[in-house]
Amino acid sequence: MFGKLFTRSASGRATVHVEPFGWTFEVEAGQTILQAALARGLPWPSRCRVGSCTTCRCCLLAGDVRTLTDASYVLSREQLANRVILACQSQPRGSVRVHLDRAAATLRRDADPSAAAADASVPAA
Image (cartoon, rainbow, N blue to C red):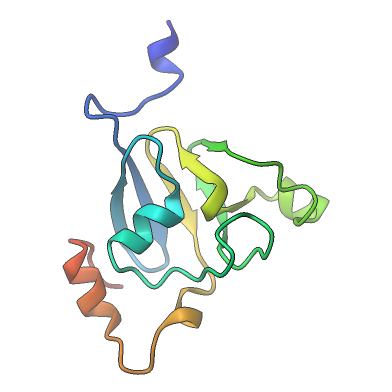
């Protein structure tokens, strides 16, 4: 009965699909979306990594996440109603699809986003 609530694979990994970039990556059990993205070299915007700056926010389009901290003190009611989440405080429960508006904000001038995506086995958009 409980196994269907949390649809992680047998390995404990979950999958994140990021629009509009076309990135797809695995998240290990206990890892946040942000931790997994940064570990793969993806240019996910972030600053504080503790849920207070909202730099890593994205919109949860499909699926479910476990939220590590209450984000209602940094996100508006409207954002919460529209399923905006903080990637640094969200652990996916199975496959999720998110929309990320500001990924280019953290690209270094010399960074090649397609190279970062290739290194992470993630197709570039």
